Amino acid sequence: MKRIFVNPDRCTACKTCEIACAIEHSQAKSIFVSPSEMPHPMNRVFVEASDGHKIPIFCRHCDEAPCVAACISGAMFRDPQTEAVLCDTSRCIGCWTCVMVCPYGVVGRQLELGKAVKCDLCPERESPVCVASCPTKALLYEEVEGFSKNKRREFASAVAAGG
View 1 (cartoon, rainbow, N blue to C red):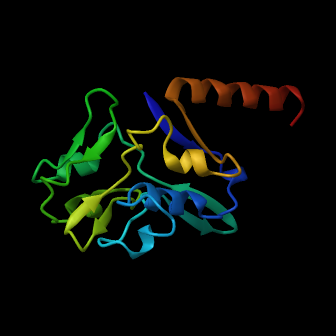
View 2 (view 1 turned 60 degrees about the vertical axis):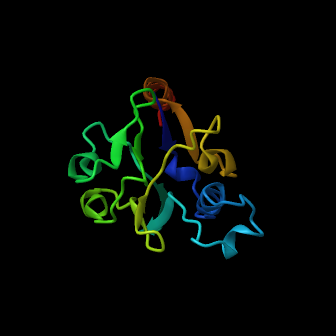
């Protein structure tokens, strides 16, 4: 299963990922046309800064997803093939329970439609648009096991080098 990972040391808070995400989830998919669309395009990734650190925050597609457990209409569900947590907007009743229980604060409210919105990992793309658009490569789209293995190798190399 592939997921988005963050290298926070590389994030410059340029917000390119936010803009690209909103455009990708718009009707026109155009930076020039999308801002005037109704409903307004919404990003599903958020760049936050705290104590001088910048980090993109997005849905973690939790194994025990609180949004899925709390959704009273069944709109929030786990895709059986990708294991991604998705929202079926045709079933969403706009109760915002998913928004209240998300530990990361990344389930958004499309107020114009009364629907919840969240990261869908851009299923029609090879890589989510936030990852593809990041100019510093702070975002990675990798298999969970591969990412963990690479982190262990980096740590071992740093320790071996005396760092």
